[in-house]
Amino acid sequence: MLSSVLHSDRAAQMNILIIRAFIALRNMLATHKDLARKMENLERQQAEHGEQLAAVYFIVKQLINPPGKSKKRIGFALADKAETK
Image (cartoon, rainbow, N blue to C red; front, side):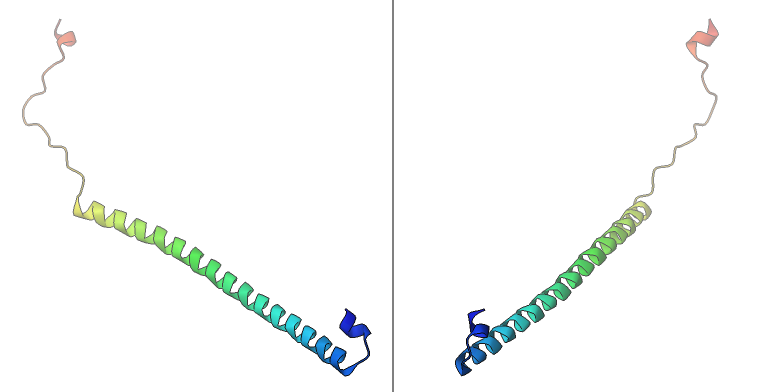
């Protein structure tokens, strides 16, 4: 603030340097926002791909180890003891 009030060449140069510093800071913050947005997109995509891979692994495991089939018994079924009395 003082550099803009003083009327000297050095004060004008300092004012210009301060403005350039703020412009550089603004550009750096904008760059970081872009990077943060890209990181969020990558995290979201990674989560989606993780869910899809988990579903594929589950299906492959089912194909490798199919559930056991129940065997039908050959012969007559025995009547329950309560029914015979």
